[in-house]
Image (cartoon, rainbow, N blue to C red; front, top):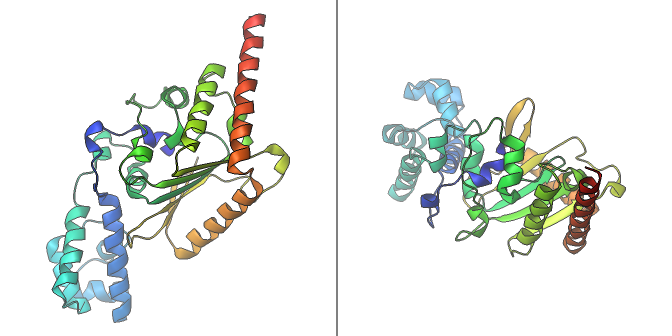
Length: 293
């Protein structure tokens, strides 16, 4: 599950300017797709002229395939890219797209998400079930995944590193009330969320039960936005697996939903007060449990 990807980072990887190969491939793919469209060619036509398979070119354009320097040179010739600076830019993206990301050592089933999150300039999360991974304490994450996940050192450096992304997390009240790992773990976890909310690049909001129905009752999603030309990505996780939506209409739709959720949620200031009251409730519940044990 991607909810604890914030923990799976090695100390040696936190270097300013590190560029995600996952994002580089998507950035390259978006540029290649744009060049082909400007030339008026379909994927089938372009692939046929270059003796590529359609699947190979399609994978390169969606950022799922590796492009070699020869591939880039051939595509530039076909699309009429004569400017050496632009050709070198495409070649550099292809080279960076072949690099090894730190997360690939772990053989994670959601490695694509980690690669996207690593370089996102803005992260918007709505969750109705659990605290998002970037805000989880080690104990909370362990309570969620101890049976199936290896134990890695906890780290939240993505939010405190050089040039961090902005994080706007909207949580349903159920996330606050569910005692994952027990009352003590939840006290520490909610304290961690409140601590993160004090950072200038983090915004936390809570949707209380009394808000009633809202447009994402049956959904959990993350919107990843990039400073580069790589397309925005909407990441959806559920029992059916991991879904990545990259069409502009999808990111626009989910951003509209996110804005509506933000409007019905408590303000950031009231959300922190709400969290503080929830911490007290978990303490009271723990005390009652201890007395009756």
